[in-house]
Length: 78
Image (cartoon, rainbow, N blue to C red):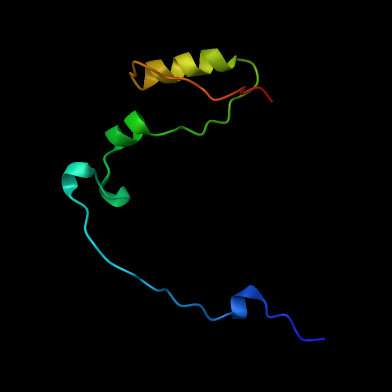
């Protein structure tokens, strides 16, 4: 039976079909993106403590970050 090669022993090459630059008017690279954009367009991964409801935590987060709109996906209950 032939030996199976583990993934770390497989030689891999990166093939780039084309390189281009994005116009700054369409946004920033992740390294240059301001925190304001992360808050406006991003998501927060929150480990909710037991006790407060998901609606309370969403309201607190909205107040702390001074946001107009906030929501949560699904239940945050453990």
